[in-house]
Image 1 (cartoon, rainbow, N blue to C red):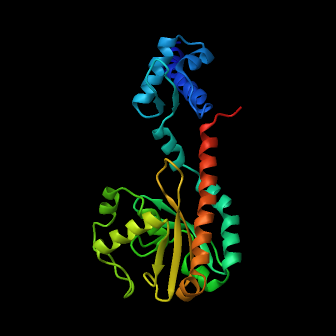
Image 2 (tube, rainbow, N blue to C red):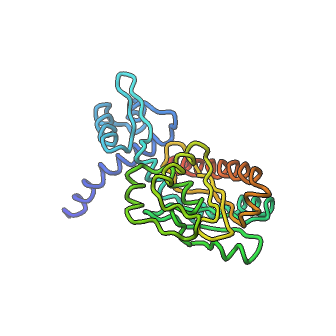
Image 3 (cartoon, one colour):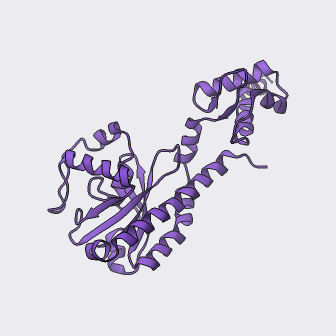
Length: 267
């Protein structure tokens, strides 16, 4: 008889925390602790204490009283964003990849940062030659691939230092192996929102990429068009740059909406 009682006593506080998070998530612009207490039929002092505990670990953001309001915290938002279903994102991105390939005649793919590696997630290509160049799951060289540089440019300096704790491999005569030169390029990527690869990993091939940016979240994905250097940089350079930037913004909005839906409790 004592075991169910003990279980209930440990579950009750966690259930209250969960209900508080569900209610706060339903108010993207913020809600007062008093209203949360009314909805849960809890004393003001109790609900404020519970919310304060959630705020202490970053799951909730709360402003100072007397007009206190609370929102879902950055930590919880990052957790939900980082755990976004890759299968969902691939399915959502495929129409965009197909559209880019149809418009440019070049291969297009999305890449994702996992740990200290950037890998292609899905690709649409017009022919077998380009399809063999980048395949889903393939790791992209951080210092030589446009899709990787588009993501890496927005990571903290500590991350970059750790990612490049070994000498940079030289794949072609155009591969950058000097850290100073690479860091300068990453600065340019942050300024322009576009990353390039020109004969850096494979001779004759290149890429143009743009980060997929969701406000307030760590940048983990990029959108990239790849093909021969002639097609990308001598024929349609400006057209492809504009298209990649516009389509990466489209995918950013998809991810932002997905994150917002994840934070909103079911009705």
